[in-house]
Length: 479
Ligand SMILES: NC(=O)c1ccc[n+]([C@@H]2O[C@H](COP(=O)([O-])OP(=O)(O)OC[C@H]3O[C@@H](n4cnc5c(N)ncnc54)[C@H](O)[C@@H]3O)[C@@H](O)[C@H]2O)c1
Image (tube, rainbow, N blue to C red; front, top):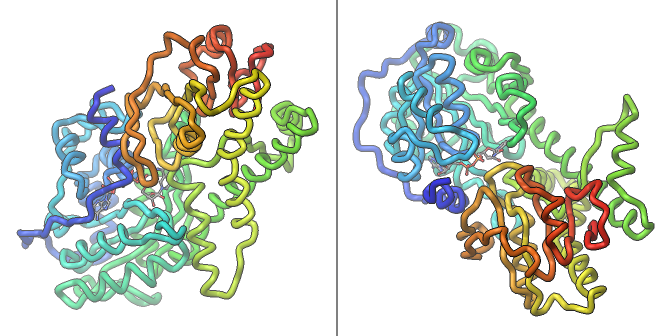
């Protein structure tokens, strides 16, 4: 895996905030009526601009390109743009060949926002993290929108895809677009607007990304695309755009309904994972195997969907998104208690892992302090190259704080650099001297690992994922 890819992955939390000031204006881009735009979409002649070439934006760009659209990717990270322009990839599951095929279809990447003038549809896929007080950080959306507004022209369609609280598209993004554009353009609102008036209006919608990274069973184009427009014309145009690359679009009545749909999906996961995490801790105390119980419950043909316990939540979505809604709910004098409780339980899981490691070492008359500990798998989930919010990072820091000598291995990360919360600066170790560690902790159950061999050579294995299922050894502690 090229070093560059790992470096960009590690630093993906820290996109530079400075925008390139646009220097040119593309006067060739003419206004078009909504019907003309729809026609251009159907004929694959619409030019699609995607802002944010990350885990969401780049695969989306490739999907449009596969369907013969000419796509331009915009990003403030010059290294990503340069990598794409060389026909290379910085996301593990995207092969360089896919970038080069897209290039032959007209795909290019740029930091230059002035090229937005020429786009017919603009899709925004920038990060939506939490700030240090666990509140929504919309700065990436507002920065992007402010930079985009001067390039807006009549007839363009702007769609936000970043996960956010209900109201962001209309209350935050839309006013910036209206105030910041040079021509006094207004977003199309109401049912009558947009029918033939291409001179004064632009169109705005929200459509959430619903990808499941690492899922190879459902093709991206088979995930139905939820779309909510500010008015029916905007909904129709966004529906036509996404309908040309997804097999099914699901129209909802407003951008806020689409924003809330995405949050419901993620909150559902977050709450159910918290439930099984809590039940796992009870099962451990009762001498029961939660994995066996979940497997048995899953045989019920209705009314049960399995969720699995783990070392804590990770990724850009599940640990973050629910708190966007908690924050917004305060405006309505409402407490989202399920979200808060789930957050409390899930946040505690790395501490549970630390306690389990301590207990396991203690039974061998050893302490965490001074122990040599190997963390297996640091990505936040199996077989993916994403470190964001990974519980492995918290577990490493907790172990180091207790005086353990920590090493790690992950096939996807040759080193761990600086993240949003951590600056670990660790280099991956080899898997050759497993017997020298006092404890090996399976944090992420990548399918590349030979767990039988690992248990065979290890002194002690703490397994947070049931990766050692079926391996009967007194050296294994399931936690
Ligand atoms: N990763 C997922 O699996 C996933 C799934 C569903 C939804 N989402 C949501 O999609 C959004 C994007 O997530 P992601 O994982 O692609 O993030 P990412 O960090 O991988 O990519 C975001 C990209 O936006 C760029 N960027 C930031 N500010 C910019 C600006 N002003 N102009 C141009 N580019 C800018 C960054 O440099 C980066 O390349 C988030 O809201 C996330 O919650 C992500």
